[in-house]
Length: 280
Image 1 (cartoon, rainbow, N blue to C red):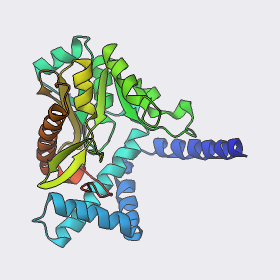
Image 2 (image 1 turned 45 degrees about the vertical axis):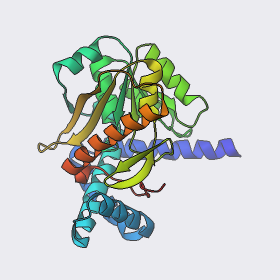
Image 3 (image 1 turned 120 degrees about the vertical axis):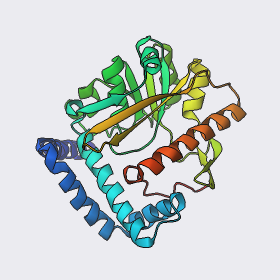
Image 4 (image 1 turned 180 degrees about the horizontal axis):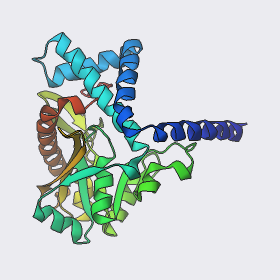
């Protein structure tokens, strides 16, 4: 019976994916805006949590400004999700300096920290196009057919985040020369950090990968530029591996969150969370 349900899900997903990927790219922002208005209108908890997060990050905004920002950021994220379904065909502009390009082209395994802005998989995609050896951590539902797997279509290798030993597998990929990207702005209880003036906790994954693989850490993020095109910025973050201590992990993640704050303040309409990010 369960296999039957999965088969029905797979068929439904295939039909939906074919419809969404066939949509002209220029129409996706309009669809995203409509979906954002609908969801925020009917989903009170989502709306309340999104507003609460904006108030913590940007406390000087008026209630009307918070409302508008929640809509714009949610619409941007939905557009990014729609574009992720067609990941291999996305047109992106990649920006990094010569020292970063040399690190990426050197064949050495690297750890890259990123955050959830606009199209979430822009960074793994950019790294794949630059190096051909991009690996990321994600969850791919079992009912999505492999033929419609956007990571596989784009040549991106990934580790299933819900499987046991995921960290070890990521570490092995780095040791084999892969460039591993991790979203680091999500909630976890590994280390204590200050985020927009509020105490919270954060994952230590990027710092620990850097420490155990003995590799420097890069930082990368995606955004939608003024020309309406996706852009990815890759920058050097730590030139030496993080030390293998809890204190060093905490220091590295705090520095990372300080940089996240500056990115979010520059692109507030492109970063979105609808759960309580600041819980402890």
